[in-house]
Structure formats: structure tokens, C-alpha cells
Image (cartoon, rainbow, N blue to C red; front, side, top):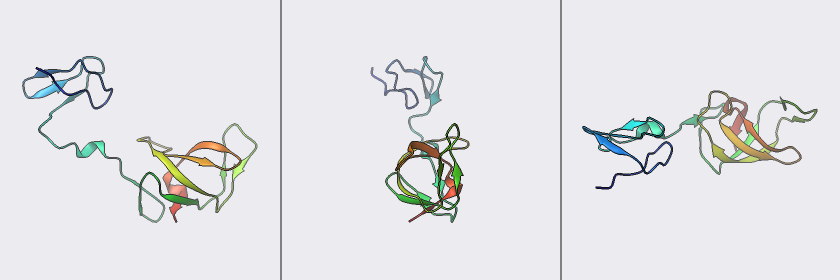
Length: 111
């Protein structure tokens, strides 16, 4: 009997324990009959708008780049490449002249 892969680590070595499925590699347990609403990441900008991958954003504050003498100026525009579930930096973006950088959602607004 084949079980689905683990949603956290994509391991194919899952097994069933009563009504839950268990991944022995990462230890994650889930119930396949329940909907996975907690897997969706909800990130909002400074104005409360919902942000998604591909949205165009603008900085609302000058930001210092850690480990560099350059900074990001207010009004710099970019596109969200990836959204990460993190405590501080949720948005993965690429700024011209600086490169790829992670930004906190409270310092951006949706264009």
C-alpha cells in the first residue's frame, strides 16, 4: 500500500499510525483527511494588503543592508520571488544594484 510523500520534507518513507500518517525522517505527523489550511502562508504589507508571489512592491523606508555599505532607498521597486515562513524576513526579492535580499513585509507596500 502506497502512502503520499511527507509535505514537510518530501520523504517517500511514510507510514500510517492509526488515522495519522508519520514521516520517520523528520518526525512530522498529519491527518490526510483534514484540510491543510495551516500550510498556506499569509503575509500582509504595511497597509494590510495580502502579498503573493509575483506581486510588485515598493519600499516605504530606507533600509540598511547588513554586512554592506549600500542601503535600499525609499521607493525602490521590485517583484516578490518567494514567500518564506519566517519570524523576521518573509519576502525574497531581487533589487537592482544590490542583488537578492530578504525583506520584512512591514517595510513594503503593494503597488
